[in-house]
Image (cartoon, rainbow, N blue to C red):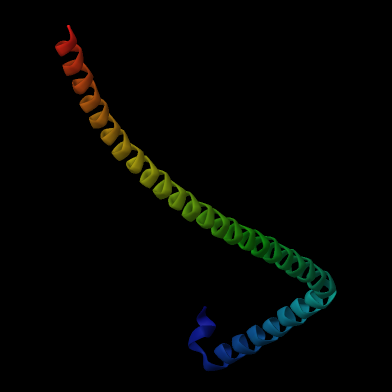
Length: 118
């Protein structure tokens, strides 16, 4: 570390570090050149898998949207039928009330006649 105070020593260290960095870069480039075809294959496989997954998800989303639309249509039809049945039920209840009143009137008339007869 005594050389760090010496400008020539610092310059020599910088030159040595620069040389070492070049060597490291050369080795790194060689490694990349050797591994690049494999890396490219790996990337291609990954891209293919991602594309396949996107298609799978897209298909299922489309199916889900169609199923939801079908469900909503059935729900609307069911709600319409429920309203129709409710209307029919209300009409029947009204008719039953009228029939009950008529039956009560007829019953009271028959009862009155029977009372007068006996």
